Amino acid sequence: MIFLSAGHHNTDPGAIANGYKESYLTQLFRNRIYEEIIIRGRNVILDKDYETLSQYLKRIQPGSGSVVCDLHFNASNDPEATGTEVFAANNPESIALATELSEAISKVLSIPNRGAKLQHQSNRSSLAVLNTKAGISILPEICFMSNIDDLTKFFTHQDLLAKIFACTLIYYDNLKS
Image: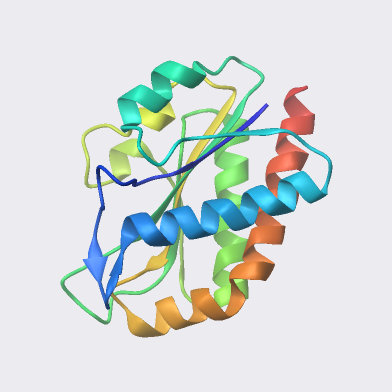
């Protein structure tokens, strides 16, 4: 089963930069990926925009056959910070998915690939979505929303990215089925 979530919601707007809330961007992109997964005849479980992360994690309780993707956008005080990175649970399938998506995002958006990373490489002590005991868990930081060029490239190419995410998540879900 694919679990797809916007990393921020109505109760947690996330970063704010260039006139956008991270919650708006994550919900927008989650919904585009959802449409692409449904078009391909697959089921996906979404978070709800009014849920907190802990409510979402309690509700889904993923098992070993799951693929969990929690979408985020990076932000920095440096408006020149750029690139994409994807955090992964510490297992080979999660790392492979994170690597594949970070490479694809970098290529499509023509931004630096900061790579696949484990949670200890983040600026947070723990990334809860990577500790769900799901078979595969990732947390993509699509691009820097604080960098207007990154953000413009995301808006220009979000449909292609949504298709790539959908197909890649489906592929990894098939591996676990």
